[in-house]
Length: 108
Image (cartoon, rainbow, N blue to C red; front, side, top):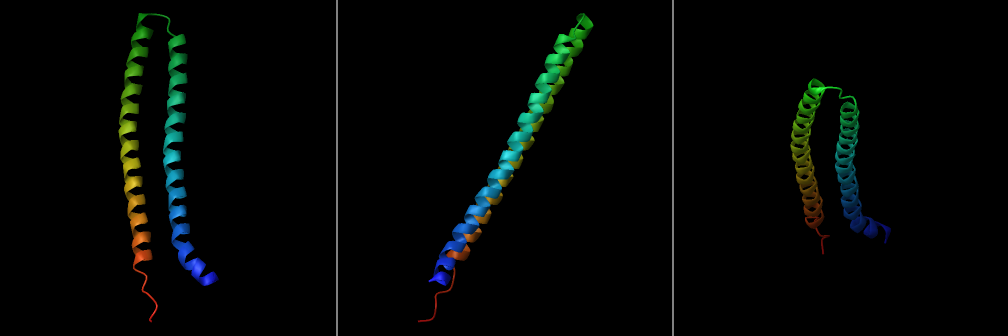
């Protein structure tokens, strides 16, 4: 009974491990982006408070444009990474399912 349970439970266990691993990786991407964007927002506010003249305002605007550009590029890269993670996860799930389905039946 134990062996039969293990036979059927093993693929479920593998699929759950894959799901957890994938979830962790996606969450890492999101948390890093959130942390970096929060820090950039705070720095932007500090810079805005420090504006004393027209030149300072010009520098502030240029810095905000550059920050926006960097975060747009980062979002594109993170999107590509998330897509790659999703594709890798799907391939691994298919592999586990295929291995489970193609298990040779015991000789009758």
